[in-house]
View 1: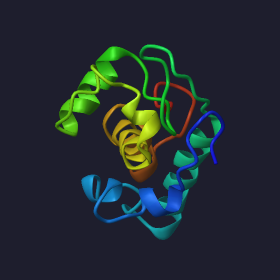
View 2: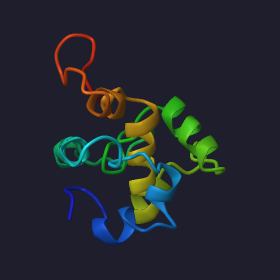
View 3: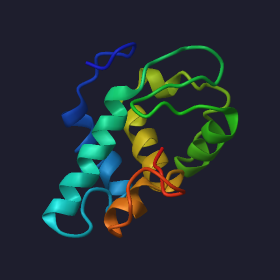
View 4: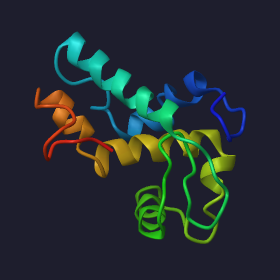
Length: 128
């Protein structure tokens, strides 16, 4: 279980082909097996580092969806209104993981940096 979050089980919800991964088929699947492992390890390292909160648009989910503009953009991507009820990200395990992979794929450089064998961290190619 992740600190400060509901007790949803990550492997049963993040790996389901009908939930999170099907929205981002290139997540953890581009490049060599080493590159795929490196991306997944970096993603879960970021997940482990994050902590939870239940105030306004503070962080929720494994990769801490924060700020109203991120809730709005993620909500649009999932065809739902997360601005009206941001707690859904903390309360719904599937949505929580989906929002974290959405952020990884859409709002950070991590996926691109890792899968295109660029420098990770440092300089202007830092992640999350």
